[in-house]
Length: 233
Image 1 (cartoon, rainbow, N blue to C red):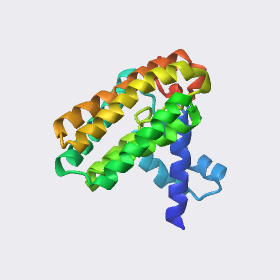
Image 2: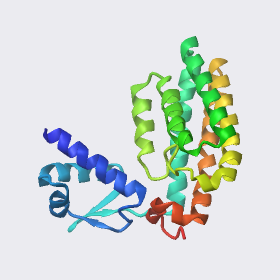
Image 3: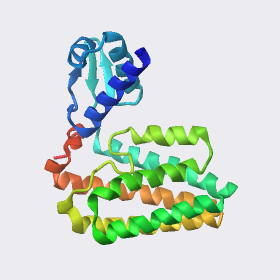
Image 4: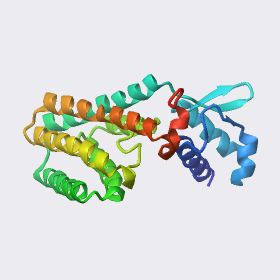
């Protein structure tokens, strides 16, 4: 039960930080959080230490503080995710992927085409996350899989860090058509066992998220997580 409690506290606090509900510079104290969440201080303390290890909190004498990120750090986190995902797809391509897994990838590409064509904004983000996770899993490397998933926890680094808004449908279609080209090219490189090409494509694909950051800054009211970024407005 203790483990369940600290994991529950961890997920809740991480979500509040990444969503921007807890602003950069906010002080967090285990005693106050324990009272708010109805938990003892022990699981709260464990969750705070874990979030410090993930780079989301800074510890000082009075407790923990939600970290603020420079814009350059945001881009570094995105690029790190691209490097890790690139290493995963390179490994998958080099070792070879079975036809059933390639078939699943191609089916997901068709789903992307339908979503983009119809501008079904709400359906894109979960499919995109599923696609990226499945690509990574094809490496069959527990270390790479764990590190890719860890990189997703950094603010803005995950493949769908900025939920797409219906009002952004034109930008949505334009940027995601390019992203979909990358998706198809990565699948093709994996199928052809072109490891270096798969790696380069995945790194380039991650860098598309830089554009999402700038677009979110322009529409700050729809991106509360930008409260973690210094001088983003």
